[in-house]
Amino acid sequence: MKQFVLLSCAAFLLGGCENAYNIGETEAVLLPGARAVAGRHCESSAIMNTLNYLGYDVDECLITGAGGALGFGFDRATFPFIYARNGDMREQFFSAAGIPWQKSADDIQARADYGWKQIHTLLSQGLPVILRVDMRYLPYLYGGKYGPAYSSFGWHMICLFGIDWSTEEALVSDTALPGLQTISLKDLHRARSSKLKVMPPEGEFFWVTQRAEGYTSSWERLLRHSLDLVTGYYEDSSLSGLQRYGQDLVELESYSKQSFLLPAVLEFMAGNIEDFGTGGAAFRMLYRDFLHLMKEEQETLRLETAIAALDGSIEAWHGLATAFRSLAGRIKGMSADQRALEYQKLKTTADAIYKHEKLFYAELKNCMQEN
Image: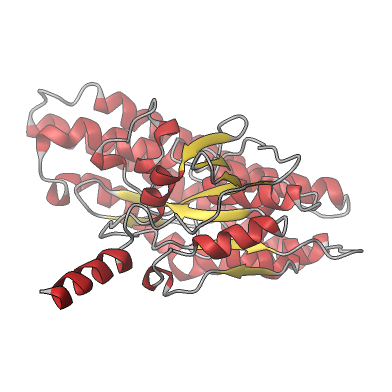
């Protein structure tokens, strides 16, 4: 019996029990002068706030742009998901910018404390820590309560700037929210240790070391890296996926089969384009800002035609999101034939996006040859 109890306790700890953050600390460790600058995407805004605190002068669009955060994929599911960016933006940006960073061990869940001791040490060294969390368990996003089950998303990033161990509270920055947010360590730990089946946060965290004296980065290198990445994504999968996208929308009810969910499904797809941390128009607006920044810093760069082509794509993405939302408010009570006609209209808009994106890709290839 005693052995059974011990094994049960061990399993409880390894699974991330609620008080795993109690590591014996009692003093506050708060980074002086920490502030949060509002951003448009969770991961890039967390990186931006970290780098700005450490003395790097970095705009968010530089992170998403140099990280190649522009792509396309479509998950044919009950709630279809639009993948509008690449999966390794963080790694690509740090590599291109020459900024050293480190990530927690992949087996972080095997530690009874979920890395809290290391996080405390990093804060004590004056380093902000970026945490990967399930956003459902961040009460400041939901009026002081946990979000509904469908709001769970385990690839949300926030930046930790301090912990008051005496009150068991932490200070974090989070995407577009103004100022630092206060959250209990209990809630923050639950967000870090959520057991989602898809993209669980797994206690992941990462950090950037102090800015090296005399650090500089090459604008030309950042642009070249970005153009290589984005054109490669277009060639590998984005263009072919965009070409199929209109037909995917025509066939919506073959994979999203519960008709009573269609209003929510259409709103969800609109949110994928405009609202869920994409910076608007499926990351295209952030990338346009990056190209403008590159042009301002290097006046000799010839980017006008690429920017003009991207403007056309942005308007088309806005148009599709508007069409999704309009149909969401009208689709209830429509017959199957009426819905099919509406899906054909969505296809026309999606096909126009493909044409704009294909032109944008061609202009990026021209930029690579001219610059």
